[in-house]
Amino acid sequence: MKQVMIQSTVLVALVASGCASSESPRSKATLVDSVLFHPDRYPVGHWEKDDPSIEDAWFESSSGQKLNGWFVEARNPRAVVLYTEGNGGNITNRRDLLELYRDKLHASILIFDYEGYGRSEGSPSQGAILDDARAARRWLAKRADVRENEIVLVGNSLGGSVAVDLAAKDGASGLVLENTFASLAELTESHFGRVASKLVTPQLDSIAKIDEYHGPLLQTHGTKDTTVPFAQGQKLFEAANEPKKFVAIPDGGHDDGLTDEYVAELDKFLSSLPARVPRTE
Image 1 (cartoon, rainbow, N blue to C red):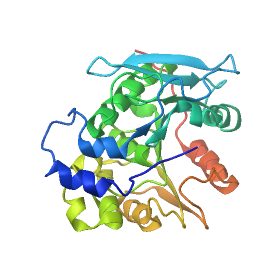
Image 2: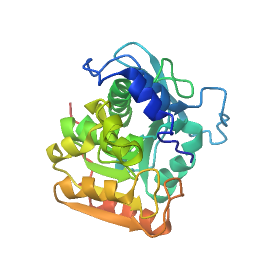
Image 3: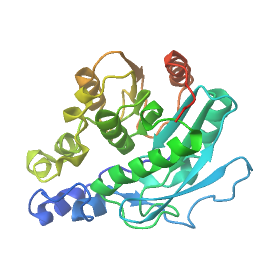
Image 4: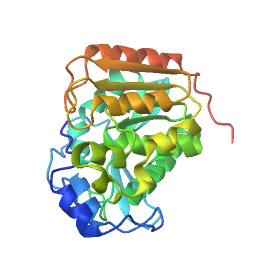
């Protein structure tokens, strides 16, 4: 699954933007966003659903943009998972996750596209993707008949900051972070220096938020990740509350596939979570 993070041209874009934005969380896309996000819009990707059990999910953001995702339901699921993707491609790049979670991990899962990705309308921005994820979680809670804070949040790369935001503000049954950064500003500084980092908005500042989450955490990071340095993942993990576990992937890069070791730990993590209780309301 291809993940594209900040390119070298981001420094030019940041300087051109002049200063950090003070707009509301639901702000319009900025020049920084135009460099940060790399969506593949429909029809790019393999959209034919070979598996008839894959359900199209359609829902709206708070601004009225129609968003799209794919949902699969496990038989007697032990968990309901919302997966927040990275900044490149679209859900067709993550379709293998549907089978993994349903058939091997015995969990129902929704993967979805942020605004401007795949079939989702609109244009991505740092504020928009946080709002998009809340809309996706509302749809999933209703579809799976669970409360929103009973959903397991799994965030990959940029999506890890989205998952942290949801968990910190609203809670979650469990939080899983894969190759994610402590903050977008710190990531920018590690690549392009302090001046550039001062021009990044604080919306994707996970290390400032994760202390507000008090549930179970599983975090993994490749030791040879050159896109999001391993130290970034470690720093975020150290700031998190217990219970938590960190799985280092020796020689792992940013875009490497899921290792057997990590999948085994993910299986254990899901098994350790409280059993789902059907809603009575």
